[in-house]
Amino acid sequence: MIPHNPWRHLAQNHPDVRVVWARLPGTYRGWTDGSTIWIDDRLSQAQRRVVVCHETIHIERGIIPADAYEEARVKRLTAERLITTEQLVDAVRWHRRQTLEGLADVLWVDVGCVRTRLDTMSADEQYQIEALIRDAA
Image 1 (cartoon, rainbow, N blue to C red):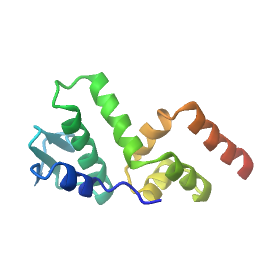
Image 2 (spheres, rainbow, N blue to C red):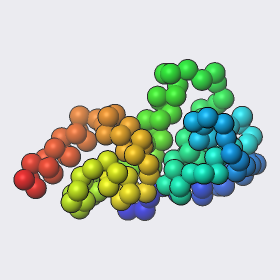
Image 3 (cartoon, rainbow, N blue to C red):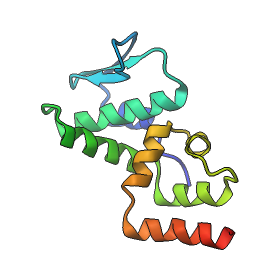
Image 4 (tube, rainbow, N blue to C red):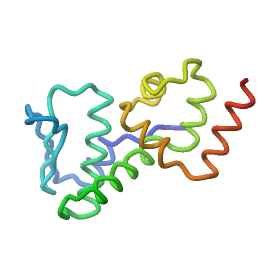
């Protein structure tokens, strides 16, 4: 099971999009206008993976006015792209300290991405995870 590589995806599918490292204002971690992705240069490698995936999805969906619904949808799509069901099940199965921080580390994403993935799982995915937890007890 090979994890999604958001950098390769960007290069292969959007070769004209530039990535610029900059100190972004406030709590911004990334931003795009469709032709450039700006990423805050203070982010960890895992955070950068999440941001480049997130901004690429904004580009793929078309640059539309940001609202809470669109942002929530892009966060969900980012989490699903970076954390497959199989990867999530495997992480829960093998990670002894099932904390969000620990799962994020194992999955090579940030805590927010793990939280979004867990909060938006399908009923089938929830069943698989719950069964693993029950069987481990």
